[in-house]
Length: 188
Image (cartoon, rainbow, N blue to C red; front, side):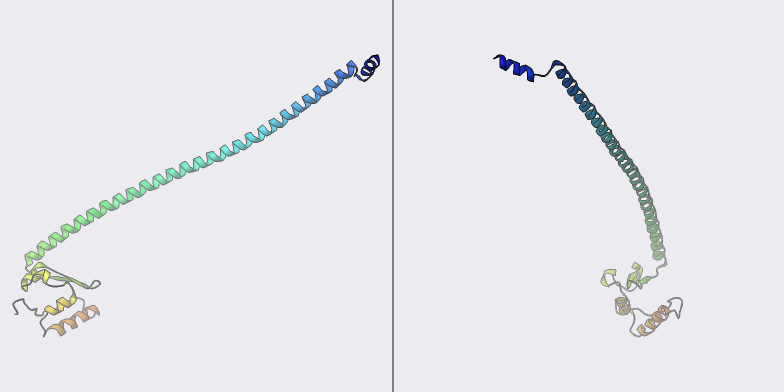
């Protein structure tokens, strides 16, 4: 047993060696802690920089969105104002047109003349009520086209009327003016 005790003492570290090793371990531990802290601070700094960049980018997007929304709002308001003005102008023009048509209708009724207006592009003819009364027909008895108009012309006058129409359309005469006979509903 003495021999074992002596061997254990021989291998046991001296008290100063233990303190020195502990100081080394403590220094290593402090170095590791400082290194970890330095790394953490550096990573925190990088992270903070990235967060700042993301926030700055977000702020730019928010500002861009707000500016875009304001511009779109202004554009929509301007468009609405334009459309309202156009609608008001159209309403005024339609009212003026109705008033003009009413005055023209009264003037035509007062003259007792039968009048028609031929729209060459659409090939339609608009007849006054007096036109139909003069020749004894109702407006709904005929189509509003040139062939109907032609069918009402006395057969002996058709060629002369057609010639005058062509002269006007070809620019040979400046206005369509001609006298001719139209068949009355009674046959006259």
